[in-house]
Image (tube, rainbow, N blue to C red; front, side, top):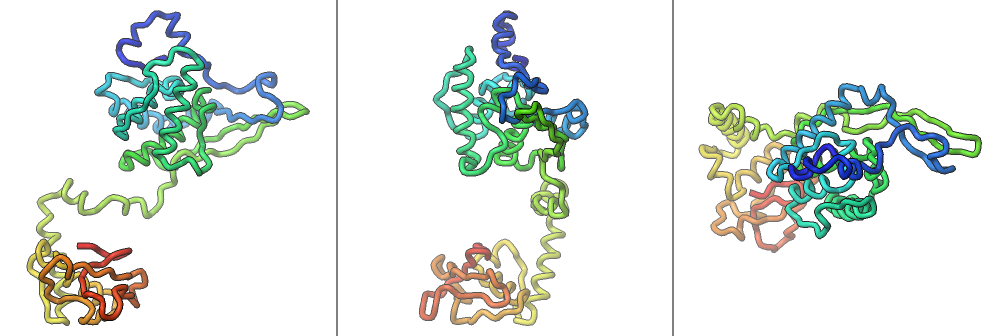
Length: 313
């Protein structure tokens, strides 16, 4: 195994070779594939695809950064993930959960049992038990690189969504099927990461980016927001000087939303000058912005907080 804790790297060659089983998957021969079964094969052109290589590099660097405190180094996703050891430590590092599995599984049956236990916990954490999975115990254990990449991409998206995975990584695969008349092959494209869309930049919070990249501009942005708010609230005879304090009770936010979306909130339904947290908490349904529904009902306590798809100051 190319990657293990420092102690494992000093093991004799014979034990090293034992720990490499099972062998990496190549193009199956007819006698190796039982009739009716299918296997995917990555042709050399797909393995040499630059974006495919970049995806592996990003994932490997991510895993090594996470496992650095445990002195574990991964050198090959295809060779180092199959027995569950790396996956075990990565899962514990990402989730903070401890798994009751043996640390070092030295025999093939024990490695498989460990991988099965770890994958079961991983699938639960990904909430993927009831969904069609692109990986399985058999696939990972047999060093199926595509299945391993699908699993690692899912973990990265779940536990580190800001990891800069290359977008729209897809490779050509050959699916081999054993039939009565021999092996059949079929080419298809396998999508490993999502396509980039125009909406992708919006996933980053612009204010987080502002604080990180240009903190000196924060005050200028706040001033621009205050000017915008005051333009909208001017027709109500209201003005804002301090965003941090004047929006805290929800009153100005309710009135601003009304001005922006063109609806009127009956003044009997909320407190213009709330004096307690209870008076600030009004569940409003604004899923239909032109016609909001006040779920408090007539005669219910008047409070000032937007819920559901609204805001909760």
